[in-house]
Length: 393
Ligand code: GLA
Image 1 (tube, protein in one colour):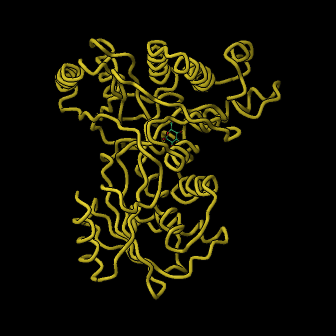
Image 2 (image 1 turned 120 degrees about the horizontal axis):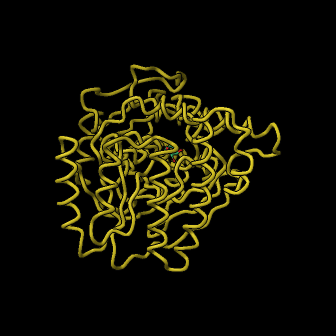
Image 3 (image 1 turned 180 degrees about the vertical axis):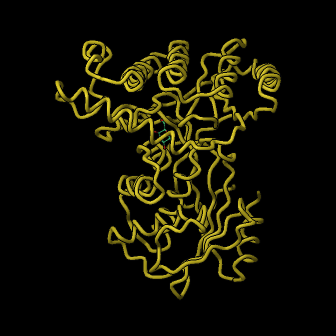
């Protein structure tokens, strides 16, 4: 989608000649540390070059008009700045609406309506955080158009609030954090219990990070996600009968093994086991990377997938087929599902020379097993949410 195409669509849809400003927020992948962010654990995501573009202008009245080039059939969604409650019929536009509502309610002066056109090139229902990307692009639009200085971490927290309290998905803070704080060529090591973070350079001259989309629609993913979170909370409550901890992220695997009998329900025990071990793996993975031990990092990625498959049970046949096939290919350093799971994408670190064969082999076996093809992308790690001034898109 060219720059010019976006502007033309804006002028046509909103029937205006006012020049809009251009904003962008990326999607994200997570290298390791899955389903740890709402357990007070560590995560290691990176913002990618796919994301959400938005063109926006202020209006002279209080109307908000939203249009997405990804959902042309829905057309323009319109509402008043004073009526920002969730409306099912507003569909995708509830994401920017929720963000405007929460930023406004935090005391920022949003004094007029807006016209906003969105275009996202994040593959559909890929689990690469298109919703957090829309939230964060809305945040930077408000900052830009209304000359606000919103502390970035506050903006990130408001994005998470939109998911939790407006949309009804009890997600953690990883996606908004990765998108809000993303830095080209770096992944972010975030401790979700303190929000302390560091950037780790991802320099892989001989390898690429491949994103492999299962093309499986993520149906019912939200309710299953919320169920996993509740199971972890129940496990924590059982452990708290004897242990003075506030999150599963505080436990080492050794402490977990010593006290796991306190968790009364078998399923909950498996969920908690994943959260604790995945957190340890993530911290370990950081060390491996710092020591340039890419193979060690890859091994931890593989272990992460197995844990998500057997203990957390969020993978499914599509992701398992891709990941297990990837493991057998030459030049593969590691592979795992990324994001919430239940469909969506896997990632694999693959040697540059083997990428072509990797795609062919994985796709052939995937199609034979599942009945349709996977889609392959090479991940480029780009910058976080921002206004685009003079950049070529
Ligand atoms: C989704 C959520 C995140 C995180 C991941 C799993 O992407 O939005 O907060 O929990 O799943 O790691």
